[in-house]
Structures are given as C-alpha cells and as structure tokens.
Image 1 (tube, helix red, strand yellow):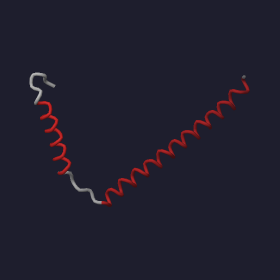
Image 2: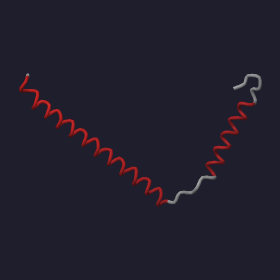
Image 3: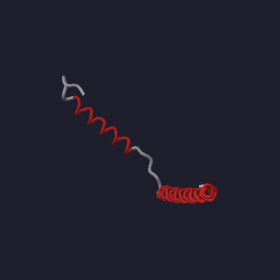
Image 4: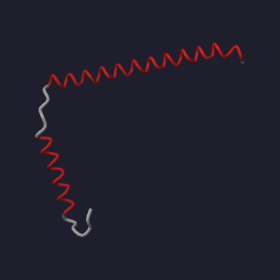
Amino acid sequence: MSTAFPITYPRRVALSAGLKLINWARRSVVPAKDRNQVALNRRNAQFRRLARDQRVAEQREREIARYLYEVRPMI
C-alpha cells in the first residue's frame, strides 16, 4: 500500500470486489441434481473415512494384542 497516494488503496479494494462479483455472476449454474450428487459424494467420503479410521483402530488393537502375546512371556 502506498502512502503517497492514499486514494489508490480504496479504489484497488473496490476494483477487486467488483471483479469478484463479476466472476460470481458469470459462474456456471449448477443443476440441483449435481448439487445432490456432490452432497452424496461428500457423505460417501465421510463414511469411507470413518470406516478407514475404524479399520486402523482395529488393526492397532490387534497389533497391540499380538505384541503383548509375544513379548509378555519374556518379561
């Protein structure tokens, strides 16, 4: 930001905001079925993430049990 020309900063902000509004107005219209598909994909991804976390937790528990089974007799 220049201190010599303080009027340029508000103009720059206004121009940036105007360009963002123009880009927003020119955006392609997404049909409702595509929005529903996006929501469905997001939900499926969340379920996959939860299932993966559960598998990792179960694997960790099995590895701990196996480790204790093999190491505890040596303690």
